[in-house]
Length: 141
Image (cartoon, rainbow, N blue to C red; front, side, top):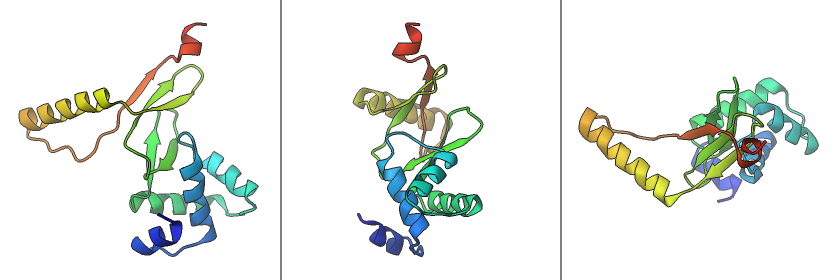
């Protein structure tokens, strides 16, 4: 879906900065932080102050157009909500982040969700799973 329709559907005023932020996150190969977003905006010759970027990011998160993720770094990262549901592998040594989409992992998480619902009467609306450890490269060093 193009950004014009996305903004119209979500009753958001379309601005150059908002459009660029969505495009940047759609093209990102991993979740990126505010600093990276601002750098990419500057490279596109879009000059927006930091507060405006934060405000736009927060609004896009509230509208469900982007996802906010946190990897125990003391900051948030963001990614497009249009990505298929996935989880992350985070290397605690080099910081590399890999997305993982695994049918067997989703199957196991669905089993856990059913157990939580049955045992605790808790209806899970969403979940996020991040795995922290050493990547192949760091593990072999």
